[in-house]
Amino acid sequence: MYFSDKSLELANALIMHAASRGLRISCAESCTGGLIGGAITEVPGASDVFEGGFITYANSAKSAILGVPIQLMDDVGAVSEAVARAMAEGALMAANADLAVSTTGIAGPGGGTDDKPVGLVHIAAAATGRGTLHIRRVFKGDRQSVREQTVETALALLLEQAETPPVKNQP
Image 1: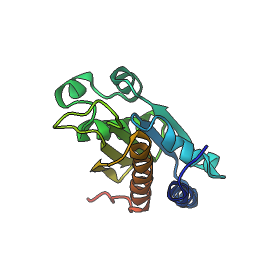
Image 2 (image 1 turned 90 degrees about the vertical axis):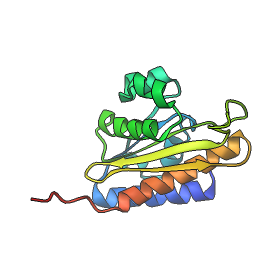
Image 3 (image 1 turned 45 degrees about the horizontal axis):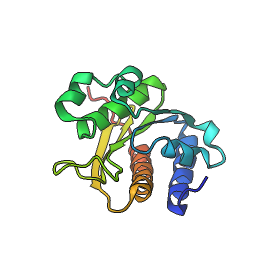
Image 4 (image 1 turned 30 degrees about the vertical axis):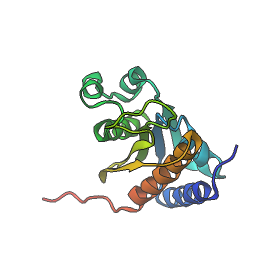
């Protein structure tokens, strides 16, 4: 399997960071179709930290596996910040992990609209005690390029989330 050098470097850094802190990782993927989990498991030592991943391409799978409300997807669409956040938080719970990343987007070549063009992706990274980060990107290129850029961005966001100190409870 081919992954970019950048994806493998990010996956390696993520695995080393998670292993040094005893953190477990999960992912929920729609437009990337398992590529994030593939990049993570390409790195030796992944089994020490990677709990597993969920490929939830259909809305029914997002709901059944990750607990994303159907009404939410009906209201804002599957390709949205709210759904990306719900997917990451659902993966965190479903895998009993400490960190989870999700992707939802339109990789193309079809499926885009004026409001949601081809290349639009929403990526979220959730962490126990850290909340959920989100980024929105519109990547240029063909389907493969959009998916590769999404994997790199998702791994970078998950690494950022892993490096964020937990929020301490205030009295």
